[in-house]
Structure formats: structure tokens, C-alpha cells
Length: 375
Image 1 (spheres, rainbow, N blue to C red):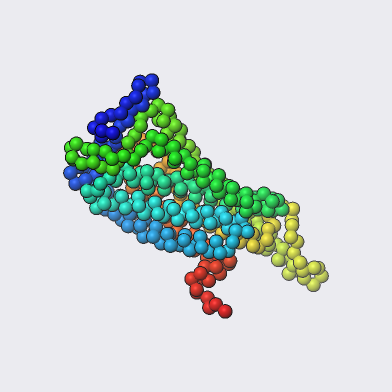
Image 2 (tube, helix red, strand yellow):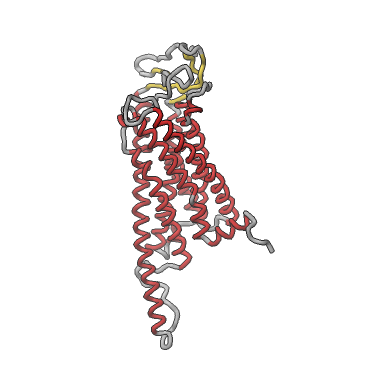
């Protein structure tokens, strides 16, 4: 295809192919369109300094998260998948691992030294389809897996006698696959409108690897629906489910703690006249085994960490195009970097939560790292 021509079909199809953006990132041109703004809240120097600081922090955390999630996947694989919770936690670790990889690549593209260098591709557009776009979809996958784990723990408290039949390893695996298709699947439709192609720019006398956009009313409508579904409904709904389940679990943990204290007090008072065994079911749904209680506490910590780190993503999802196409582009770009920071932190700290709150995981990790003397 001649890069200087525009491919057009008959007007009944209303399909026109154009190349975006019209400016590329080289020394001969201005900075990337997303980062070159009208005079606003941040100057070029201030924006570059903040970008450098955030990118370096995110890269360090992402590298550590890369290592910790690989260790978690190995440990959970050695522990086996006879327990449903191991399957969901392994899927969460795999999502976090993928997020670390795409986060490192996307943040590298934000560095002024990298984005302003003479590269044979358009950093801004290629970065979106190969890094930021995939990262956003996988982060939503991790959000829904966290929501599933939190909801599963709620069922363990509400229906402790039925949850083993409802949440089996098989149903958990199916749920992980459905969540993945629900969150990552729409990304495939983006490639119906966006295609990689070599594009010739006459003002640079160079052919650059860029993205070709097909403007069709049907594809535009599909893209708008996907953006509303994936950009707004999915993250906000997952966030709401995690928050609701976490609040419920915290309340129930307080009830369980009070119940255990009352049972212990009653045993101490009547230990000479009554049986010392504590009741196992109060009929209120708040009595669970100590093993389940520890798992619930671990899920609460994981969910709370996710809530804190996921807030910037939900905030960014609530803004429309006018926010990042106008004077506030720099603020939006900083918010995007904060999103990467929150996602990296959330995906990196889980290993410490598992290690401190799950005895089997702690033992498995110590054996993997040979921290215990083998007999």
C-alpha cells in the first residue's frame, strides 16, 4: 500500500483508513502529543522531573514484583491445586507478573531520554497497544480475581457448610478463565480498528512503524461500547465488590473474635463443672475454623492493599477525553504514572502477606529458597 495514499471504499461502507498521530517522536519533531501541552499547571521541566522520579520508582518496584510473583507461582505450584484458594491465588500472581512486565515497558517509554530518541517506531502509539493497553486489561483481570477471592471468603462465613460444594477447584478454574475472557477478551476487538503498519512521513523522509486506524461507524461504535465497558464499568464494579466484601469480612472477623473471647471466658469460669470443649456452630454463621479465620484475615489484608492501590485507577476511569486532551494533559499523564505505581505496589507486596499469614506458603517458600536445613 502506498503510504501517502488513503485507502477508501465506497461510501456505503463508510470506511476510511488514516494514520495517527501525524507527529512522531524524533529529534526533528516536538515531544509526544500526550506530553506536549498548552501552558498549564506544570512546566516542561517540572513534568520531566516528576516523570523521572515516578518512572524510576515504578521500575524498581516492578523488577522486585517480577521476582516475587515468579517465586509465588512456583510455591503455589509445589503446594498443589487441591485447594481452590491456591488456584485463585496462582492466577492472581500470574496477572501481577504480567502487569510487572507491561508496566516496565510502558514506563520505559515515558522516560524523556527514550521517547525523544530517534527510534524506528512511534513510541506513543506503539506503547499503547503493546504496553499500556494490555496492562490496563490485565489490571482489571487482577481486580476481578481479587473480587472473586473476597466473595469466596464471604461465602465461607455465610454458608460454611455449602461453600465446599459451591467453590471447588474445578469451578474456581472455570471462574478464572471466565474472568480472563471478560476482561482481556475486549482487547482483541481493538485490533479490528487499530493495525500495525509501516508509515512513511514525508517531512522526515523516513518510514516509521506506527498504527493505522480504520474509521468505520460500526467499528467506532464497537470501540465506544468497549471503552465504556472496560474503561469504566469493569474497574468501578470490581472495586465496589472488593470494598463491599472487605467491609463485610472485617465486621464478621470482629464478631468471630468476640465470640471466641466469650467462649474462652465461659470455659475458664466453668472448667471445673462443665465440659471444656467449645461449641463448633452457633447458628449465626460467625463460627468458622481457625484455619479459615486465618485465610479470611489474609484475604482482608490483600483486598485492603488492593483498594488503596487501585483508587488512582478508578479516579482516572471517571474522567472523559476532555480531561487528557486539554490543559490538564500533564496532570493526567502524572495520574497514569501513579496508576502504574499503585499497580506495581499492589502486585509486589502479596508475597510478604502470604509469608506472614499463610504457614504452608511460608514453609514452601523457605524450602524453595533453602532457608531451612533439609533433613
